[in-house]
Amino acid sequence: MSDYKLSVENLKTTIAEMGERAVIAGRQLALLNTVEKNQCLEVMAAMLEKEKSSILTANQKDVDNGIKNGLSSVMIDRLRLTEKKISDMANGLRQLIGLEDPVGQVLSTCIRPNGLEIKKVSVPIGTIAIIYESRPNVTIDAAGLCLKSGNAVILRGGSESIHSNIALTQCISMACVSAGIDSNAVQLIPWKDREAVSILLKMGQYVDLVIPRGGEQLIRKVVEESTIPVIKHYKGVCNIFVDKNVNFDAAMKVIENAKCQRPGVCNSVEHVLIHNDIADDFAPILAKKLIEKGVELRGDKIFCDMVPSAKQATEQDWYEEYLDLIISIKIVPDIEAAIYHINRYGSKHSDSILTSDKMSAEKFMKEVDSAVIYHNASTRFTDGFEFGMGAEIGISTDKIHARGPMGLKELVSYKYLIYGNGQIRT
Image (cartoon, rainbow, N blue to C red):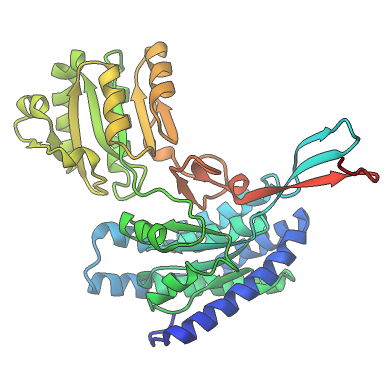
């Protein structure tokens, strides 16, 4: 990504040229068979492993610059690559190889009374634009998923990860060339100019779908400016409800994992609801464990009376995605109150019930309106890799086309193929 700025007109021209190249590359990708796509994915994985040192060197420049520029520890965590993370990226590509090709699947077929045979067949979407912040692994996830699903992709990463994204994109380009695939199948917008995003979002003649990944501010900007369909989630306000019939030790471990393992990600828990019948016993023990982990506690009046060190939660707190070692805890009278609270304040991302009561679990899972709902498990599993997708292109809280972690099957559309023998409509 270059430090110099281009004029708006030059940006428009250059991004349009990228769009044209993406469309051409996408047409080639759409015709590739599964073996050809899998061979390219294997070459990409091997290239990542081969270039591990140069990738880490580039990433360290970004980390150093991020620290110098005052990025938060959460952002640095998202930005930093390690040998394990690079190995995980390569393994994610190889997992894609073992997954079924989503292109060319016959989704349905029927023969009409007039003899017309109608087939509904899955096809690539076309060209996808991915706009993202911080996490360099998105570059590889997006490239692998789009290639396997036959889509060209235009990437626009954040300026904080410029060196990492350039190094990773170079690996992808080398892999494509080595596998005989158009290197324009994966392109990175190499300028810091913010106008580049606004221009890309108006390029509907080339781009078929936009997927933003990052903070709420970025995603809202994309939605407001785009003339192209957008799949997204604004934030992850994840809740856990602790029912009255629950194993205390197991519940403690789930909540600790959901909050503390990686607090800066969208599937970490932000709010815990505790059934009033067990609150006197459960809440103080939970508070002690979370405080020992460095978690700041906020709560409603009932919880704060039980745990005097907790701060009083405001109305706004229940809407918050903290992305930090902060959690808000509320005591609720019953499961109905928990469901109401989650449907009102949550973001429809991921929510969990901890209970040994099967009927309560079924009620919660049926009535909570979220993309992913858990019974006796951490919300941290809302992730394409954990769902067996190989990787994910993002998580959607929309209800049209894609919902929850988005993998290969969410990156195809369909068309109808009609076979006749001279039929005409009368």
